[in-house]
Length: 179
Image (cartoon, rainbow, N blue to C red; front, side):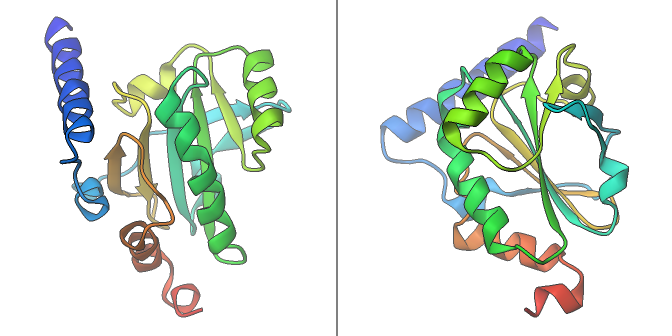
């Protein structure tokens, strides 16, 4: 466990150093291809108490974003996630934002203030966070329509950048991607 914490801390410090010195990785380098494995299970409740299961989104590209209100890069990333969702409106694209263990009251206050209109799921016991191997926030995954994880991103991403839009477009079912 100490190794994992040490490794995550090292990665976070390297990213902080890179950003501070203007050598941050390009957006296209941030989308790390995955080994095409089935996504871990995800079954959580949103702020209104409705259940959301990743399996219910089969046939869609799903951006699964792990975040917290106390995480500044997470908060900064939210508007680009909302714009990406708008960009793909009418296409089989969904966003599931998984909050990392905070109270529903705190999350609701943030969502209201930030005017977020995509599903915010609560992970009070960090079970989903552990199952997905998330150790640094924000951490996002692009899941293909077949339920397989295709890309992951550690840290803040501009989800309206050309590489992010192209990654989503490549995963969309052919007829949707041509729109």
